[in-house]
Image (cartoon, rainbow, N blue to C red; front, side):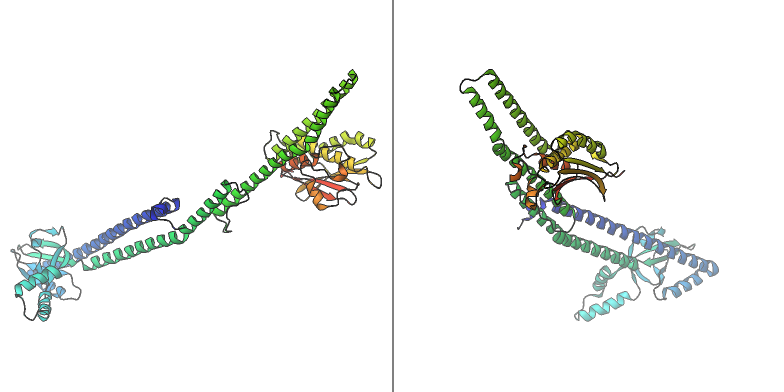
Length: 491
C-alpha cells in the first residue's frame, strides 16, 4: 500500500526514525566542530612551542655574537628545506634579511604574538607566479597589477612572534599554517563523510527495517479490522522471527482464542438451556395442569406440590451447576484457594459414598500412596470427585462380574493423579469419551440413569480452574477418570 510523505510521517516508526536521524546528525555536527577546534588548538600550541624554541636559539646566537651572528644564523636557517619564517627588518619595517618577501600591513607594528593569522609571501614566489601568468597571457598585463592579483590569490597564512632588538631592529619568527589547515580540512572531510555515511545508513535502516515494521503494523491493523467485523476465527500474523511483534501477536491470538472459547461456551449454555431445560419445565407445567383439572383430594394436591418443589430444586441445582461451570471456565470465581490435603479429601468423599455403594452392591476401594497437597479449593475438588465417584457407582452396576470402583491417589512425574476406575461397560468410543465432558451430553446407555449431564462438565471446569486436566481412559473393562493436578513446588 503506497503512502504519501505526510502519511508516512504520521506513523510512529517514521517519526522515531526522523528523530533519531536528527539526533545523530546533531551529535555528528557537534563532533565535527569539537574535533576540528581541538585539533586546531593542539597544532597551534605545537606551532607556538616550536617558535619559542626557535626564538630561544636565535637569542643565544645574538648574545654570543651580536647582530652579525644573528643575521648569519637567520640566513642559514631560512634556506633550509621546510624552514620556518625568519625576518629581520629595520626600525621602519624595511626587510633586511630572511625568507619573507612581503607581509600583510601592520604585522611588524606590534610586539609579541600576532593576534590573528596574517598573510605573507616567501622569496621567489612572486617571480614564479609572474612567469606563469606571462606564459598564460602573451599580450601581458602590467607587472604591478599581475603581482597584486597573484598576491591576493596565492598568499599564505602564518602566526609569528615579533621582537624588537636593542638597536630597535625588528625580528620576526613564525610558522606557516598550511599544515594545521590541511590537517583541519582532513578532519573536517573525514567527519563530514562519517556524517554522510550515518545519514545514508539511517535511510537504509528506515527503508529496510522501518518499512518492514510498517507493513507488519498494517497487516496487524487489517487483521484487527476483520476481527472487529465479527470474524473471531481470524488471527494476527506471526512471522516466526520471535521479536516484539510476534510476541504481541501470539498474546493477542491467545486472547482471541480465549474469547472465542468463551463465546462458544455462552452459545452452548444458551442452546442447552433452550433445549435440555425445556423438558423439565414442560413436565412441571403438565403436572400443574393435570392437578388443576378435575377434582382431587388434598393429598393429591400436596403430592403434586411436593413433586413440583422437588423438580424445581433439581432445576435450581442445574442452573447453579451451569453458572458454576461458566464462571470456572471464564477464569473468574469467588472461590478462594489454599493448601488442600488430597488424601484427606479422598477419604472424606469415599466415606460419604460408602453407604451408596453398599446399597448398590458395589465394592468401593481406596488406594492412597502417601500424603499430597495441592493449591486449590477443597469444596470444588470434593464436588468434582463426588460427581465422578457417583457416576462410577451408577455405571458399574452393569458389570459382567462383581461391580467395583477403585479410587487411587499417586504421584506421576510432576503431577499428582487422582483416578476413579469402574469395571462397567465404560465408553469404548474415543469420540464419545471426548463428548461426555460437554454440558448436558448423555450417551444413549446413560439415559436410563438419573442426572442432568453436567457432572463431568463441572468436574472438567473445576480441573481447568486448578490448572489441571481431566482425562477419560478405557479401563478394560470399564472407564477410568483421571484428575491430574500440578504438584506443589515446595512439596
